[in-house]
Length: 242
Image (tube, rainbow, N blue to C red; front, side, top):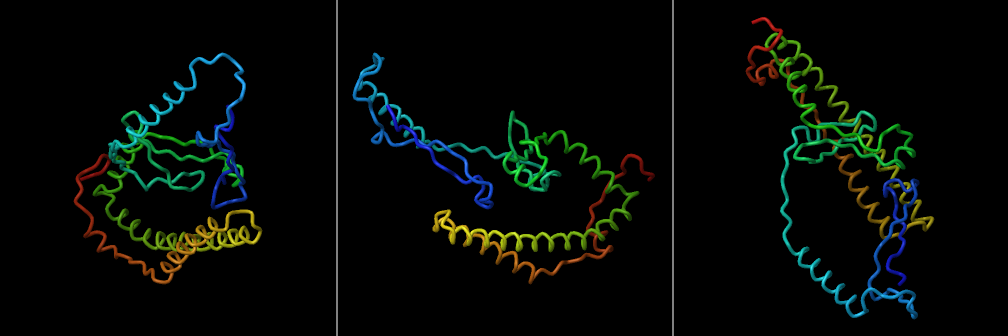
């Protein structure tokens, strides 16, 4: 039997077509399979039983697919707050062995293309980080450090606002570069025009949103007095005088 599967070329990264394609195997429909006219070895079962087994497996798979999947919600204390120190991307979450993990996946092709020395996976457990983070926070917000902490929070506001503007401006520049590459793809005919047109529409929408944020953003800076009043009460912490 032949033609049960076919090769299909898929882009490694739709946002960076320069990385090239990878080959994937896809299943063909049974009506396209090619059977040998001659028996090449003694069959274990006859053709009728073979097709009957195929029908049973298809029916079973259909029944299984109709069942509602029971999704479990897991809480991650640091979700969306952790950034990889190697690639500067936000680290994703993963639930494994009844524990919360954080993982940064980085394909080898991406690492080579972007010249980043990055392992394929960076993984750590939440319980290895949160207790140390709690201890650090408790010391920062201890009564003896109140004035210093308030001053750091006040000064960080302008830094964060500037960083946010820089990040938004970087999004605009990134979108401009992608639009240029996508239009070059259409001109060269190297990719499907409808697919590239969809990429262009999505990128233009993202660029418009970022550009609007740059025009309308008005950073709100709290005074030191306002930060001090908003701060919750804290008890005594280790290493501090009463």
